[in-house]
Amino acid sequence: MLIFLNLSFLIFAEETVSVDLDTVIERIMENDLDYRLTVANYERTMLEYEKRKANYLLQESRYNELELENSIRSAENTYRNAIEQFVNNIIREYTDLYLAVLDLEIKNINFELAETRLREAEAQYRIGDIGSIALLDQENSFKDIQFSLENARDDLQHKMKEFAGKLGLAGKSLELAELDYNNEWMPEEEEVIQAVLENSFQLYTKENQLRLAEIDLERAELTAAELDRKIKEKALEIARLELEKTRNELKEGARQSFYQYKQAVKRIELNRERLRSAEEKYRLREEQYKLGLITRVEVLEYKASMLQAKYNYLSAVANYHLTERALKWEMGLETEVLLNENTDK
Image 1 (cartoon, rainbow, N blue to C red):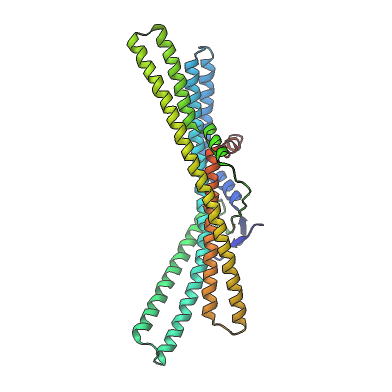
Image 2: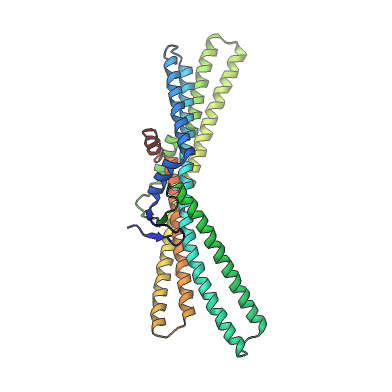
């Protein structure tokens, strides 16, 4: 179930548009000129490589074929990295805005708390329970919280207007859907390592360099002088060592990425439990307030605590989405989807 956060109070408009993260990514891709240029340049590059490939068919050179294949894979890797970075930036902007609205709600509660405490301090000052210095401290605290609230509100309003423009929805009010979370995907460590090795462009490049070094040595053994042949032999040895080093580094990197993903899941579970606890405590305090057992200030304090727990939970969810995406990217699980979706348009 999608939960929408109403931002209509920030942007005055006749129409309200509800958007989730997938819709936002799709709309920005449709409207962003830098993205469209990236796709067009990639498609042109692929057409140029197809032309070169056709020319190489007449030469029947394995060496040239390997070099061309490496160039094609390099262009694909550059394109994929650019698209992935583009999408990640959208996700960050979306989640930052959603969390900023929730943070504004927390600041509103803190402002109400500060206002209530200031009124109490003024009443205490009038009857002589506190002095002028204590009252001044309370007034300064109130002004600081008020200033922080006004700045946060203005900043969010500006960012939301810019964001609506990126979606092609300038002048419209937005409702952002809360990020959902389900822990249905949990690969094994060895599965992650294997997939990373199979989909690593860096490893592919080293393997290709090894094949080219082997061809160079084969040529040298036929026609080159002995010293040149020894140089080619040493180049082949270096290529093998670099391949082994790269493979080991990728394995370690895959283990680290998998560990970070598991930690992101644990962080969500921890913050979800804290949120449930904070919600229950706030519910109980509301009931006590209705019965006249506690003050309004105490209720607001628990509400602020509950909203902060919600903020921490949703922040963990946002981090999870980026961490999961990064791991899938390394494993090649997002690559083909992005490549196919964008080149088929």
